Amino acid sequence: MRLQSWIPVVLAGVAAACGGGGKPTGSTTATTAAPPSGAAASSAAAATAQPVTGKIWDVKMLGDAQGYRFDPPTLTIKQGDGVRWTIVSGSPHNVTFWSDSIAAGAAPQLGANMSQTMAPLTGPLLMNSGQTYTVSFGGAPPGTYHYYCTPHLALGMKGSITVQ
Image 1 (cartoon, rainbow, N blue to C red):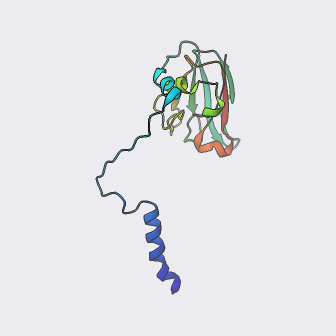
Image 2: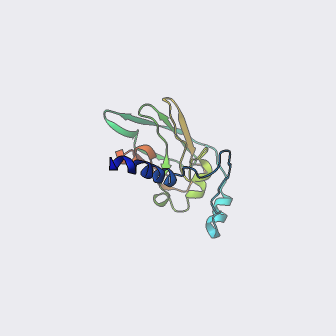
Image 3: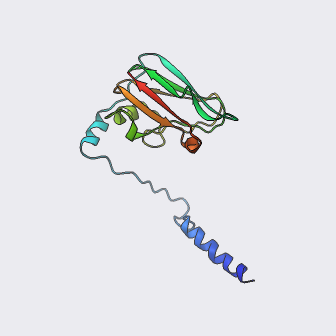
């Protein structure tokens, strides 16, 4: 009987912690992050999206009995090429680049070349087989670009692209 008397108290605490009763219905408060400062701001402001001017490479996004993976997991491309990821199975999938393990100074240009981002260097979450996401490496400096699928990183879904 004592356990039942604590249930309403615990539920009220959980609701408060999760934001229950927070904003009134219909509130549309928007928040934005502070803009970058210093050199990062000028680099980010200077980067504009570059089109694919070379070959478009295809990478499959898979999730099945063999595991979650990109196929092929590694690519070597030329500056100006593009990469198109296509869901084959095991959705949802996306493409997220590690900002600390890509070519030095590449983040502003790569970010500018990525459309419909959910976060910095994070492509949209694709839900259906056959959906694609293409990123241009136009203007991207040579180097290796490591990336992963956010929902399946813990399952080892990672890849890399070397830009020559």
